[in-house]
Length: 480
Image (cartoon, rainbow, N blue to C red; front, side, top):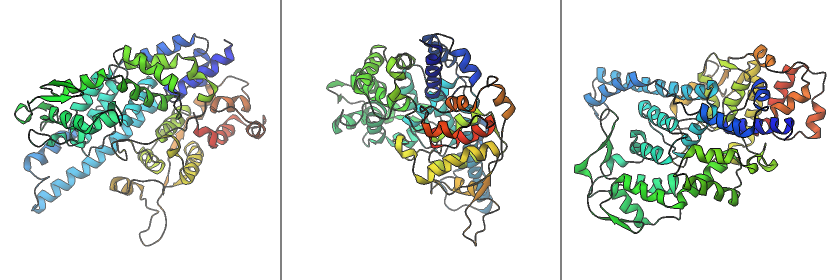
């Protein structure tokens, strides 16, 4: 393989398995065997690195619970103030958690681990108004991102965030709640059409008593569990939740469902059935070893085929993280990252529903594309930005954040904000080899193959900095 071919393959690998790569690292890595590069990516991502931001908040929230102030209707003035203060703190900590996750992706030296955490964040989509629960689930996804899918599935299923979100806290003997049991099969493992309504009913009975206690720890309440005989996928027994998960994992359809989602996220929105079958078989035979499946994918020739390079639309998180990593951007007011996510349609920790963000073409419409194309010049040259995009109308915290002093309630002015970011241009330019031409820089920054229009536009007498801003503001930069 030529040095140029390896250069392009490693660049593609790091765009998909991470959030891009610096020119210096790319030059070093492209001198190595590709399988070795993949091995090192996996090895660097094995170490766990949890977010520990929210622990202090949870003890304060417990005060409210113990005092009954969440449920109580007739509060005196002091109780109202106390509840308002805790709810205010809850919103602030939730925003801090969002920023902590995106900042970790920007600064990590284990890009594949964080990219996988982002994948599982969308796969096991969950909204929790308790930031302690949300952080706990995010850390479960990070810790098990490249481990055993069974372990990940069990831990997610036992997390208070998911038990609360899918109503399993209300699932008890004699009054089964089927919500979690349904989504476990439809969205997390098997996919629609691979189970019956009776399977959902029997599964729900098996998960009765799966709850969490006042400290946010999983607890199996034996007295609320239905111990009766269940029939699930033709098997008969006094099943509990983990038995159900084991039976689901015995079905090859589960490995096919996960392999398809992984393929669509990392390879191409248009599934190639032969490649998905290859991945799924490997995943199933490895007893659901996630790292083994990822290695199989990243070392397959088809992963680097032209139809899979520069053809995926970056998610808002991938776009913002990639841009920030590429140019060593620091945000003086990191809250702008929340405004940007919200306006682009992917506000982390706030998926639209339990199915997560649809991805693909849905990331782009006329207004979000225009905003995406403006963001690089604003982030890299610090400008004013108009936030009137896809904010979640129910999210008062985002709406409140989006308001600035320039917004007057009596006028029709739209909320605006200064990005207030600093790109480290000297650091970026120092990563580039001496004598690099604007055209070569363009080839590095863009994943799609350059067309005649782009080649003509990038004249060799332009400076590298102005070329970088111009190229990142093009529609082609939205593809990876």
